[in-house]
Length: 125
Image 1 (cartoon, rainbow, N blue to C red):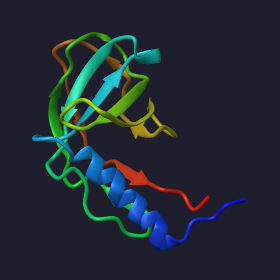
Image 2 (cartoon, rainbow, N blue to C red):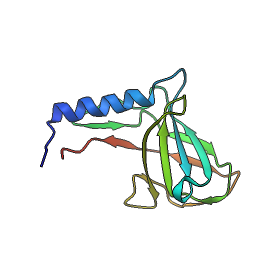
Image 3 (cartoon, one colour):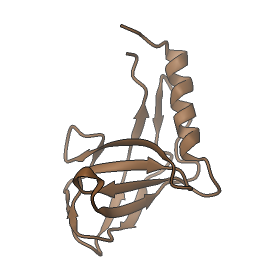
């Protein structure tokens, strides 16, 4: 099994964070229904999006508040993209145990969602 050093994990986490900040504007969380079928919400990140990594972990630089839900549906997956729409990473959405956690996943167009925290983590193995 390959194991990454803390220095390597930290460098990789910072590189991913820099990819989110690529482009002329802020990166975005794009949240979708299952299979990326319907875009429910675009939550614009702070710019820069993440604080510098510590031990392979970057925390979202500031909470994202009041992101408008544009379509009704059940949140299931997300993409974290740069301002040009280039996908940096994808993950799951849930009420617990997911990459991105919200108190409820049934969203209605016109709702506003908040993303209070997110950590970008590069595991040791």
